[in-house]
Amino acid sequence: RVLVDIWARLLAIAPESISTTANFFELGGHSILITRFISDVFIQLERNISVRDVFNNPHLGDLALLIESSVAPWVTENYIISSPKIKKNLKTIFMLPQVSGEWNDSRGFFDAVDGRFNLILLQQSNADMSHTDKVIDYFVEQILLLQPESPYLIGGYSLGGLWAFAVAQRLIQLGFEVSNLLLLDSSAPGLVKTLSDFEMSSIVHYQLNEAGLELPQELNLTFSGLKQELQSTGNLMSDEYISQVVRRVDFVERNIELAKNICIDEDILLPICLFKPVTHAGQESNVSAWKNYNSEMNKIDVAGDHNSMVSESNVVSLCDSIAKVIGVNGDGDPNKSNRELLSIEE
Image (cartoon, rainbow, N blue to C red; front, top):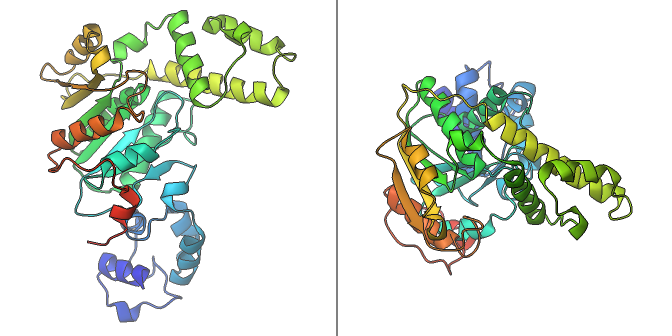
């Protein structure tokens, strides 16, 4: 019944004229309406489907079966993790992931949001990593599928802030509006290009620890040294364990190399808001670098541990700050379950 109502509204026809054998395209559907349909399915039914799914299953009954068997956004490991219930009356933030390309622990983040805005965490695991523009196009496509119309609120955590910057530029180039760019402890483009071997090593070791892939003390090396030693550590770790480590190290390295090639469009002025942990507030070189792109950039210091902006000690303060920036009222209750709150229809 929900699909019938969506089709009736999008295609401007009477619900009674839509049967289970009705064909989306024969009723007047086209590519633009597909994106709106996918967005409505995501919002109303909490399911992810693709443009190809609609082309391959144009009949209502077939689509209903496909959607019924699809995975809910909350538990998907594919390309998106979202608020348990997306509400049309709330602002939506699309947040891009850190250098690992994924969100390791997002439950606390959603609890801290506390129903004040929709939060969609995009993941990078399925992106084409062959070229910088391919990654940008991947994120833009996901955003447009889930929200076909602007304005957009785009954010990014750590290296994800750089990708968010590039995605926001691309959306503006395509004629869309970006109302705010929310950067969570993200380094400016110029600084990423100058990462030392030691800094690369620190990033890789941190990402491995985040994924539960701790290395033996013997491998506490520089980045270049680590890559060499991983080829001859059979006596320290199993082949399967080494394979997982190598895959993650390679992805992190590739992701950083691609991010270094992000081009800056000097003609596009983005409204930037940089969230920094108070323990990092002294890193004025990064703040100054971002201000080169927007002299009116807003820097907000967030209380908590600087090791992870989305850690349990930070997310409540962080989400309170984000809510104020995007003009959402209410302080939220970090002890209230977001899932319980969003299970009530408004």
